View 1: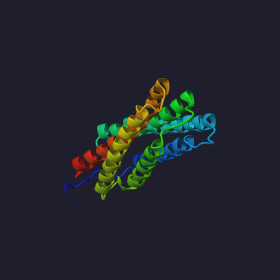
View 2 (view 1 turned 180 degrees about the vertical axis):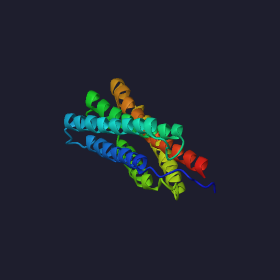
View 3 (view 1 turned 90 degrees about the vertical axis):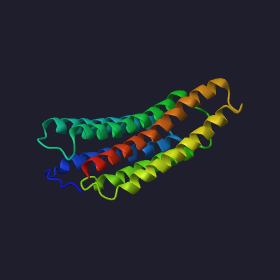
Length: 205
């Protein structure tokens, strides 16, 4: 084990925890957007506000990297992790925006399972952030995120098969494909976050 002599700067860890919390909020809003009685305009407005707050947190991390004498791990890795977290929020915002724009009258049944996977990824990522200072006991986190991403990929294939089964009109298929693909990209984004944390842990060990 390589000894780590870097001074502790809790502000970075607090900001990463804040960024992960935004993802929990975003995933919850996305789940709300799928509700039959959801006011989609209202949910989309709240998602835009949440995405803006997430951007502010990302900007705060970037500013701190520029001014900090030392960082908790390599500056490049701080940037990579901040960007990966921000990308997931952007993808979730995209899904909500597409649902608002297309306003589909019905959604594939398995879409709710995808959102459940997304919410679980967000919860696990938020729970992992307090362990960043020591980079300890995180292996279970990235293994579980990888398992969830595989589950999401299988569900994504099932949804695509349903879309092309003849049940939906051609225009509906195109619109729903946008939503389905953006949701899959958000789940893959969590795998990128987990992989980034794994790479940081290996490098710092």
